[in-house]
Image (cartoon, rainbow, N blue to C red; front, side):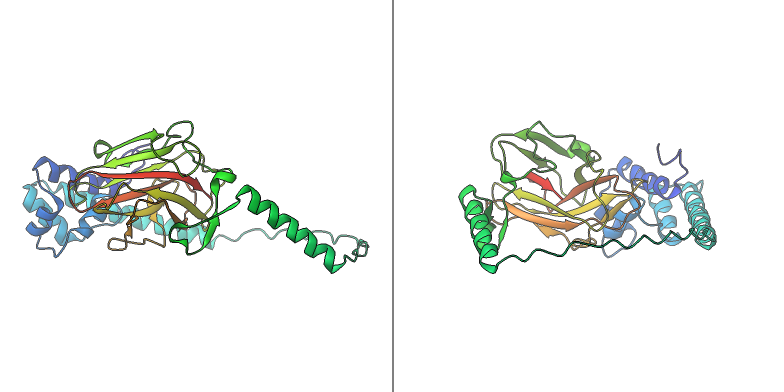
Length: 307
């Protein structure tokens, strides 16, 4: 269902501003300069429908784009009305009394067997055997830099190992600026990883890759682990996010907003990233946004996505 079909006027307004800007061949930086803004970060939020722009900014956009029929201002008024309606619905929903649950019958007492006493030397011997087996099969490996041990996902199952292709990972934003493929050139676990190549500076277009499949067991507050590798120093950084049931993005608390991007690995070793699923009503998608400072292509390998 599109934003217009569900009446999401915030997204319609953002898309209208973005389409008119692109039609005039303007970058976000150029539009920010025309509107006398100190930066273009807020314009990104407005164009993606994350926030409703103030009236003076909308009037300024109409001036820059030479809009004389008040189209942008009308969309803003509808977006404000829509937001007010949603707040009213939430208030009514929260004020509705919930039926009191019927009391459950108390269970009859059950006599539990007395615990068996185990000699201390038996426990020690069992622990020694377990550690010996773990060492022999290589259950643990050292994290990059040797700072702390991390679980070797090669010895356990992962959610996305890309052994059977891309596993339905694809660009969520900037489709024409992101290419991707499963590759056997490098791998953290198994024989393949997902190779991602991004082009064009983020000032001109946002880019992100992610998936809407295989997330049935993922819940808000859970930790997602992903391993990334680069061929060398890359002029880019990343942010992790999740979609809610309406396909609105919510940023991980580890990268909450513009200016809080997470740096890519500085070397060529695999590096572990752990991020927290934000509070959403439903995890509809997860993804990684790529920020780059120039048009120089950025290559990232991803593997062993797990939670």
